[in-house]
Amino acid sequence: MSLRLATFNVENLLTRFDFTGFRNQLRQDRVIKLFEVNSEGVYQQLEQARVIAATDDTRQMTALAIADADADILCLQEIDNMAALQAFEYGYLFRMVGNGYRQKFLVEGNDSRGIDVAVLMREETRDGQKIELKDIRSHAMTTYRDFDLFDEDLALSNRIDDKIFKRDCLELDLLIGGRPLSLYVVHFKSMGNPRDGLDGRQSTLPVRRAEARAVRRIIEDSFGAGRTAKKSFAICGDMNDYQERVDVVGRRGAGYRFEHQLEAESALDVFSHDGFAENVVRRRQPLDRWTLYHARGPQEQHLCQLDYIWLSPALAAHNSGRLPEIIRNGQPYRTVFPPGQEVERYPRTGWDRPKASDHCPVVMTLDLP
Image (cartoon, rainbow, N blue to C red; front, side, top):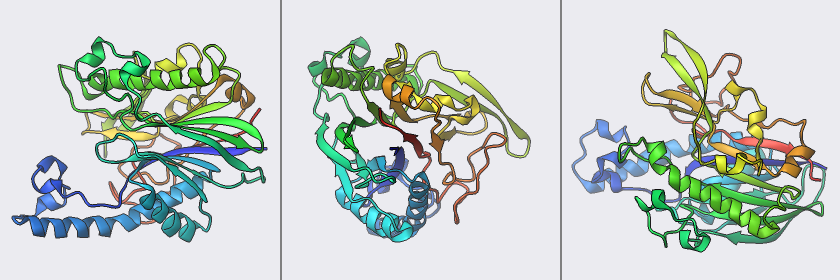
């Protein structure tokens, strides 16, 4: 039997409007900045029209990317609430693709914008094996004190009784055709703005490192420390960190070259340094592991992996000959692809938007031991 497991940050699947941009220019959409808007009421009308006009194309592409992933179990990030998930699943996945997901799970987490992690599951795998949820647990309320994770790096901007997960670690105990699989769905702290002389990635690294340590602690508490290697588990989600990147050197018109770089440290070293879990995307070629293109002008642009499927040693070994897939057809045209990786974009994809997401779905077909 085989199982298709995927993760995808769909970016701001919301059921509400954000009008804070009228007073906070940093949160105002760039198209509205082109016009002089003096009334808050007019601003709200324009923002509503802008969002509604752009959303249908965006969500059609999101649905196409999910359809191409063709997963039996889909881990999602940046979901507003269950109502948003149900509306998207019925109006886009089911209506457009003809095949939705009957089983949906979401627990409200800690994100200040209200975006949560969620899981969609089919009732059966493609080869007819039943997918059953035995238990589901949220770890959103766990604090640094609970896991004794507070240290001097965290103390610079956190308190000991703060919650570890800036969204959640959603834990699901599953049976796939009667075989156990534990799934941990996360969305780690995003990279913020520079502070204290550090760039955005480095200044937020202690928080993500603590989140990774907490995920590992949860798994070790479940199976027993030193006994996790033989179990079947997967850690999926947007982890907002990377252990390597591909620097994109050059500019449009003059051409590009691509330079693979290893990072000196990453929050994800918590999973990899002693073989606790395997990032299966690293089975792909070094220039072909990216799930996101980052750019702030020609002097700062790179490709990196932010979206992960980490497998336990037993599950990774049982699927040693398999490679994960990365669905990049929903990327905007501004994304720079290394030679040989170009794909056909979805209809109506724009230079920067509309797009399926800045992130790419990652999917892998697995056999369970």
